[in-house]
Image (cartoon, one colour):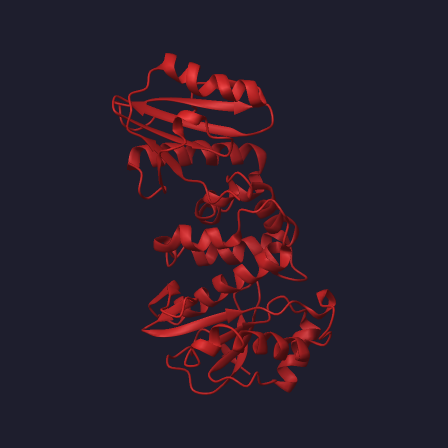
Length: 331
């Protein structure tokens, strides 16, 4: 399975003639391809640049100067570039990175203008929105599932995450967090909703003014979702009862999901705080959970539900090692 979109860096010298013979020719043979001038100039006069458009909808960009070249594409990589190092948008030279992102964003403005209306969100998730395998499934998730909010419009979901991402709180972790949404061509709505639970918790932590780091590797072999001021946090998100083959009551779904974490990450890290995100639950389902406030037999635990207008409410068991007042309305 391909990962998020990254550059391939070549340390060789390329010319237009070599580009046509070694890059365009195999793409043309495999998919039907044409070479075009890019829509934007690279902000470094040393670079020449071209754009490849394939008949199957794939795209690739190539910027080159003597002794250095950068390839970026969601298509098959031509063999001369197979054994090259990969670089993220942050690792590549600024001028090349900015050029490539402008090219990709402009293309999305044509194909999915509803998405690029949300500037920060479309920028943040660009590595998966334009990835080889995840481009269709990830865009579909935001369009059809409102990014995981039930009983909400597409615009509601996009505005919620645009508000979070516009703060810049996750910019440093762009590839780590965006990649969690997935680059799989399969439409796994449960997994993608679970990914957005981590963004919901990031919003809570940011709103509370806390410093945090996502995806923290531990000696146990586990990677817990966050470290917050040195304390570990693990996140889980129950599927709504209608999508479960058992535990078809919201209270049972919360308990079962919490127990599953105790058999895994929390078994090795019992000191971690557990966040159970019930954002997938409808208002009626959440009312049942809020009324009974089930425990998952782990402390500390926060059970919460976010709404697209930014309102988050929840309850807790045990003493949290950090203050969330102001970020969650406790019920």
